[in-house]
Image (cartoon, rainbow, N blue to C red; front, side, top):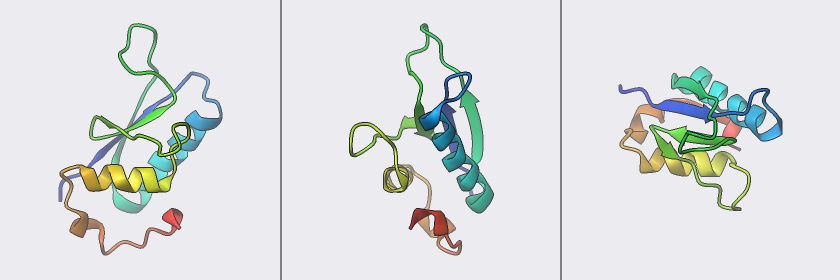
Length: 95
């Protein structure tokens, strides 16, 4: 099974959304074995914090502001990750 990489784009120190997105990434790692990386982008970086990437693709919030669990699920579905690989896990944090 191929592992997905979840990247947290965080300010340093992390604030509200940065902490929320870090918690999302930790849950994905804990429950589904995803790898986590954290980037603290500066002005020269093409992406900005706060944000979340699934396999280097930005997770786009439906409400235009805050990423939620549905946005993350959609990003995972749009990746080339085989969803059947995670069907055996109970993902209680999504509900």
